[in-house]
Image 1 (cartoon, rainbow, N blue to C red):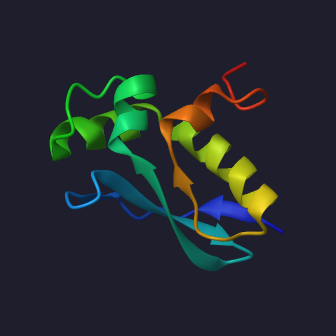
Image 2: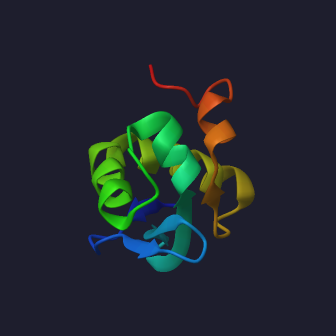
Length: 95
């Protein structure tokens, strides 16, 4: 399975308090998300407001995508929601 990430801008979801972004699994889009809580806990978002979450996503994009790729690899390429606790799991913390 070949995992890359689309160049599309991430999208704020105020109902779920999350940022959605696209991964490409063998060229097919899969929508993934990261929660506001994860962005606040691990990437410096100051609040669940759209501007704060999008800025934190951009700042942490490399790590978010790396963790997301691990999750996608583990779950067979199904849509993934990245929650705060996932970034504390052994093997997924930054080097």
